[in-house]
Length: 182
Image (cartoon, rainbow, N blue to C red):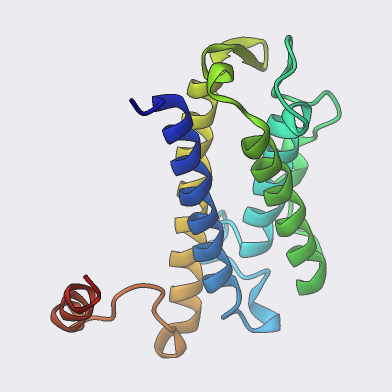
């Protein structure tokens, strides 16, 4: 019999590495001057999205980076969430470092979690969640922001955009290649 918790955690780790890779595929296409560009005056630039993702990952998962800790709070006391949404002057290298640091915290915490941890309690801003619920909340949150990055970069790059999935008109060829591998 398969341990559902172990299966879930393995899938979560793999899928979130894929989400990270998708974001990196988009970010890697930005020109230096596009990191701080937003599509609307109230929109978020890639830099702002990275700042927010990194801040959230550190806050939510820093306490679990070395495994489950009873009483863990998923909102770090020193976090300044509003500042994450302020446009700064970080360089692309600094933004890549923030991206990597945030994902390292989340993925390290995910690696340390055990199936039995999924039903344990974690609070976020004092609100109790199971670890499973907290993970699901963040999977949706992080994926949403990464897809915002993809849309933003695709729009900024226009005709220079390099697809991160199956190119338009390429489904039949892709399906044939997949069938040949089986």
